[in-house]
Length: 452
Image (cartoon, rainbow, N blue to C red; front, side):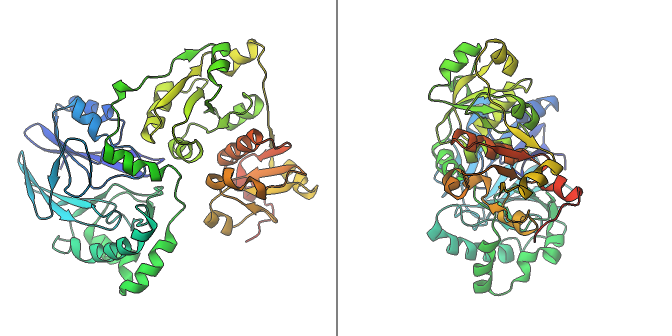
């Protein structure tokens, strides 16, 4: 089968363009950057005939609405998804004929109540299972994103889905999940993105639990933290997001215009850590443009925030794509000429300290507080002696746990999350915040003591 995967490394998600025959293709679980799917199809002389959604996504804005605008593809969703955009509702057991192929609809609740998986059968080759989050490579997607009271019944549904929903499919069935390594929606994944049913039947640790009650108690304990923006995505996707052409794109602003526009907005500085540390606009949020940029933007920027960007060479179109992906649609502009233009205009600049490992060790021995902004499992695997553990996503709500009467050395895995932490603390009026260059990785490589 001719298949084109589209992987968003930061979200840990995959969507798939699959050729079915007669110059037609189907698309499974597209995100909001819809133009890339259309371009990929056109480059191969294909027409996107159908779009299938496995579930109402909690970690990104769907591209289905945008694709309905860009193509004549038919949209398919579960009959109980509650979505308000144009689609055909599918029920378990249905067979959808395609050009030279067929889709079998399988109910696979657990990650969400409406979760549906699709088996694509073409002439020749094994079946292909688009499993969404019902089964992933080495795990399954989390069950706590709908509501607290739904976690237990959805976990029980996952137990059943893993053992029964796909039992009629052969071992050679290709498993193509939406969620994979790096996804905050997934738990227990191997880091791989695809598998086969046979491999999962023999190795997936979730299938080792034979008692439903024991599984129901254990599985939720494996979930990572929930990014704050997740609670906004499901209702936004059910309502149907706005089209890109309906959203006013940001324009370049002179330093003076930028300063004025920043009143009431959130400045997001997407430059590398060292550039931000050297000089930045006071009060800006450091969120380095990298694979996980969108996740941290959604976690740290308030809902509905009007965003302004300091980009300095980063393609602003890519920045906007990522912001739109996690639901931000209000843009105040971007700084034309970058931070150098701001400096030339004589406008005030701030800077922040970055310490190498030796200087960081001296600061710690000299009485500086140490703030570890990694996730709890990272902290548990080894941390600097005496470090206060406050994960970055919850820092704003827990600033009272960080001392203000002495310098603070903040660190993460490699220095980017801790740069965000330092910028949050600067906005809150902290003084003497220092970011540990290279984070825990550099600390370990230098042979510095680590407490487990």
